[in-house]
Image 1 (spheres, rainbow, N blue to C red):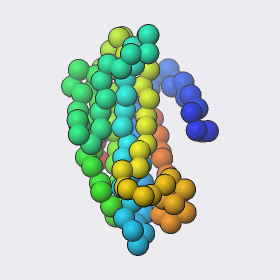
Image 2: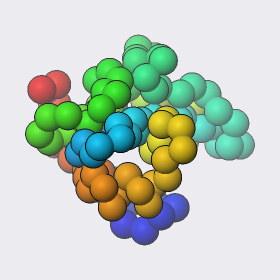
Image 3: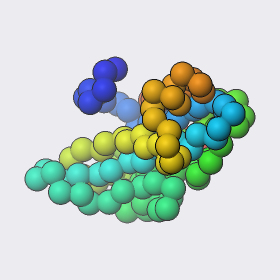
Image 4: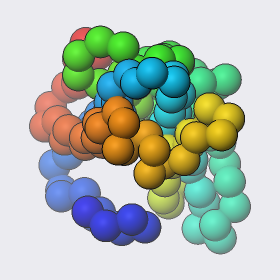
Length: 128
């Protein structure tokens, strides 16, 4: 998927998990993944991120803030229960920010490669 790309979810997807993983380098890099919900006019309904971990109304849960990228696999995840997002929310944007001062995405990618994953789930989704 390209930067700014759009992914239409296939019918039958009940939930998805978006994961962000990165490694550690000599100077810590703090990346953050967020979900932003928009209505049909493009107005923000709600955002789920490290400072607001759950939207009970829209069925979205953030795993919590990982400041260092230590550990294997995804360092942060957002689970979206597509059956509970609601009709008012027309789009969900996933945004990755770099929170560390004087760091760029290029530096983060070169020194601490990681990636973004999107896992679709048919049926129920178990938080792991």
